[in-house]
Length: 208
Ligand SMILES: [Fe+2]
Ligand SMILES: [Fe+2]
Image (cartoon, rainbow, N blue to C red; front, side, top):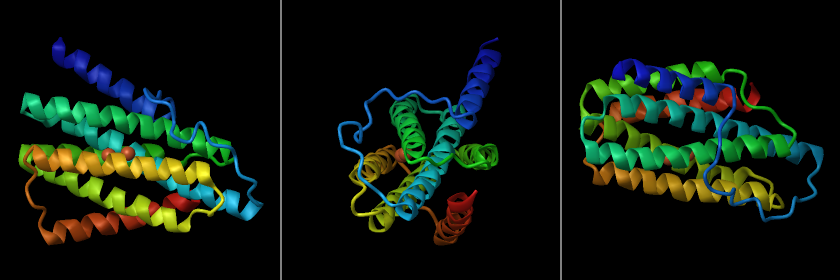
């Protein structure tokens, strides 16, 4: 029965993620800032970049979910649940920002979710230290990616920029948590494969 409850809870979380129903537990860091006057091109560009970031957060939900199903160590599990809650904030914040910019989330979110979930479970099957290695490397790449977006977002769009920068700071902490909990060093070929997969995802998500 317990396993069934768990399965239902996880399925519910998957459905909420892909159908764009996420609730933030913290106020968005962009909330207090005024909306900038953006031209059509800049607004669309910012919305597309936020769609990419939102896909990243959908993938994070799936990864942390896969992780929570396979993590063996109770202490690690607690720390990772805290990070997962912050990821849910990111998910809700980026969805809200896409809407404010007049964009829409990726149509392929169920596919991104399923792919990441499968990878999370596969990493989990290899044991905690590889599971954590996968998580740490993902967080590192997301962090770099968000830093890259700060160079691409319109200068005037303080709301989106503040949001992205604050998410970047959270991701850095998540990476440190995974390392502190005993993440193995990810072999270079795996890192390269992950980078390649991320590039495909970001390129497609910018458009679709
Ligand atoms: Fe995140
Ligand atoms: Fe993160």
